[in-house]
Length: 269
Image 1 (cartoon, rainbow, N blue to C red):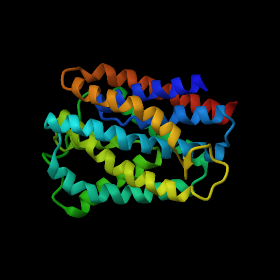
Image 2 (cartoon, rainbow, N blue to C red):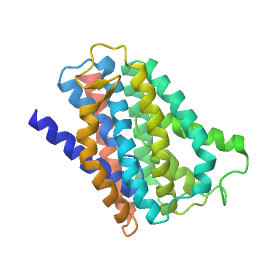
Image 3 (cartoon, rainbow, N blue to C red):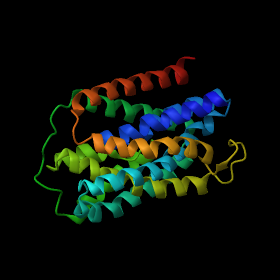
C-alpha cells in the first residue's frame, strides 16, 4: 500500500510539471500508470481504463486551476479564444465522456494507444509549427467543429487537451506561450464535464475499487493532485525560460514506451 501511495505521489509530481511546462495535459501520464496499477491490484480490465480516464480527468480539474492561475499572472491566456472555443470544448467533452462510458475497456485501450502514438510522433518530429492562418477562423461553425473535436478526443483518453489544442493554436499563428496558457485553461472545461459524466455513468457498477464515485476514484485523484497542483505551477513558471524541443523529444520517447508497454500487456502477455 505504501508503494502504491508513493507511485501515485510521484505520478502527480511528473504529470503536474509536464502539464504546466508543455501544456500537454498530465493525463497522458496519469492514465497508463493508473491503468497498470489497477491491473496489478487484480481489478477487471473491463473497467480499469474507465477508472483511469475518469480519475485522470478529476486530477486535471485540480491541476488546471493551479496552472491557470500562473498563466493568468503571466498573461498567457487568450480570452477571445476562450469565449469562442469553450462551448464546443464542453460539448465535445460531454459527447466524448458518454462515448467512453459505453465503449468496452479493450477498445478504450486501443484508442489510447493510437492517439498517444500519434501525439508522440508529433512531439518527436515536428520542429516548427505548421501555419495555416494568421488567426482562428471567423466562422462560428468551424470553431465549434474544431473545439468539439479537441474536447471529444481529449476526454476519450483522459487528457486535458493540450496535446491537441496547443498544436492547433500554433497553426493559427498563436505564440507557444499563449497557446500553452490558453490550452491549460481549456483543460478545465474539458476535464470537469467529462468527469461528471463518468461519475454518473459508472454509478451503477458494483465491482469498482473502494472510494469510487462512479468511475472516478477519489483516492487516485487526491494522491496525484496533492503533488501535481504544486508542480503544475512550477512547470508553468519554468515554461517561459526553457528550450522545449529537447523536452518534447524526451517526452515522446516516454509515450512510445508507454504505448509499447500497453501493447505487450494487452496483446502478448
